[in-house]
Structures are given as C-alpha cells and as structure tokens.
Image 1 (cartoon, rainbow, N blue to C red):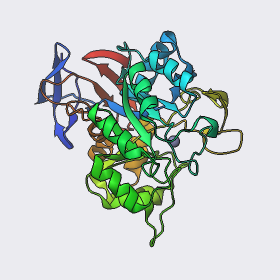
Image 2 (image 1 turned 135 degrees about the vertical axis):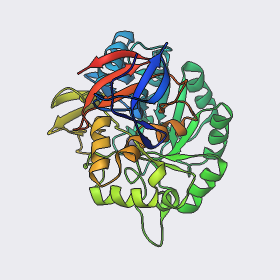
Image 3 (image 1 turned 120 degrees about the vertical axis):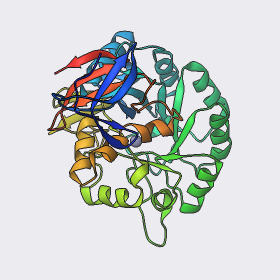
Length: 363
Ligand code: ZN
C-alpha cells in the first residue's frame, strides 16, 4: 500500500516522494508520487501524559486506557508514557498495576513516575504529604508493580545517587526535575547517567548567571535531552527560542497533558487534586499550573512558528524523546521499521494516523 503523500520526514530530512507500507512496516521511500498530497512524519512520542480525553491515568482502568489511547491518536501521538505525579505509595502501586502491556490505540511504552523523590522546595502542584526522599526499598516496590520506563527525580536529595544507579541498572531512564539542584549537583547526576531534564524552567531553581543551577547545567551539556512544554503558558516563546539556539537537536516536546486535554474547559481530577481548566489553562486550587491541555501537534506547530524547520520540529516530537528511552527505532520512518506514521496537510493538521500500517485516524 502506498500512502499517496508528496514527501516524508526521514531521519531529519524531507525526502520527496511517496511511502510504501507492506505488512505493517515501511517498505519504500522516495517513490514516484505525481498526485501525492501531504507529508508523512513519524508518529509522535510523548514522554509526559497525565491524562487525556477525560481520563486521568492515575485512576484509569483498562477501559479508560483504551479510550484515551485511542483519542490521543488524533493528535498524532502513536506512543506515550502515562505519567503519575507524586502520590501515596498504595495509589502509585495500583496505578502501575493498571498500565496495559498492549494497546490497540497509541502504544503505551510504560509509565513515567514523576515523583515521589522530588524536592520539597520545587513541588509545584505535587502533594507535599506524598513526597519522599529517595528510598531504594520503595523504589523496588514501585518497579515490581508495573512497567516503569522513566523516573523524574531531584538529584540533589540524599540517596539520589543510589536510586539513579539502581534505575539505570534496571534500564529505566532517569530525568532530573522538580529540583533545587545546583549546576554542580546536576552535573554529578549527568555523570552518573541521567540524560534528560523534565520540563526545563518549570518547578526548578531559576537560572542565575552566578548560580546557573539545573537549567544552566542542562543547557551547557551536549549529551542531555531537554524536555519542554511549548504551550506558551509554561514558558515564553523567547525562552523556547533561546533553548532551541542552545540545544537544537536535543529538545524534546512533551505535553504534560491532563484529563481535560482534548475535551473542554471545566473541572477535572489529577490524582487526588482538583484541577480547573479555564481558557485551556489547567490550574490547581492554589492557582499553580497543573499540567496542560496542549496537544503534540500544537507543540510541533508552535516550535515551527519560531522559525524552526519542520523536519527539526518533528524531530523534537519523535526521535529526540525516543532517544531518552533508548528506543532507536521509535519515532522514525525507515525501511523495515514499524509504520507508525502521521500524515500532515499544508496547515500542519493531522490528516491520517497509521499504527503499524493500519489507518487509525482518517481525516
Ligand atoms: Zn511536573
């Protein structure tokens, strides 16, 4: 089957011509396409999704996962990490047990634990009562409960080094975030193998030229992926442009979407917290930002609107986040790879989505 597109984004390059899919995998690229329309890009990979389409993953059951994983395909996301904020142990264990091994919609790659090993000084919306200092025994219970794929932690906390080493040994990626770390403490974590920072600028020690902190350390370090929420609420466009100039090939777009994303303004839950969404901005009871209603295709458009070439903006939603998870074949279109493909029209709207070659969203 040919997709009938005019070009495809392949490893960061716009390759003119059609794409052929055979047996769920990409079998041909750059094929003649005189009447081709649209651009095929890899399916988006979202590392931070608290909920979507009315479903809060912390309390979702199998039906909830099915519904949300199906709905999120319409935003171009074909693989994601359901993300659990800091919560009591029993709630995290229960949530981890519900993470499905397989999904019929967007692929569930495993869970992102955003906490509970976070800085008490940089919790944002996370409930302080459930915060914990790094604890290897608690970590083991969490890892045994379900497929943990990524952990956000504050690397300056006592015992963080041992937790980082244990996670990396179990092939769980680690991201620094919700942190008051100095640049020196952050670099120590990078030296241990931490390769990412969670929503740069949000819920961390602010950058100061004499105290660059986690922000400065991450920007200065070429082997670290920087996750950002490009909804123009969490960071300003100039801030995003600055990050792009400093770290062009290592910016990963995340949505940090909450249950109200993909639905409408209103009142929702994030674990045990009440979240109010007004004008698309999600806030907790104290007014602090509580995730977003951003979709990944909007984030790609926002990055492109800063002057970033489409191929690179797509890379920030595909290859770069897949790199955090050490999944070299995810987030790419390539011969022999699973055909997880999004077809975009000239307005950069999602026209079609294929998962393993099967058309799941048809515009
Ligand atoms: Zn957060």
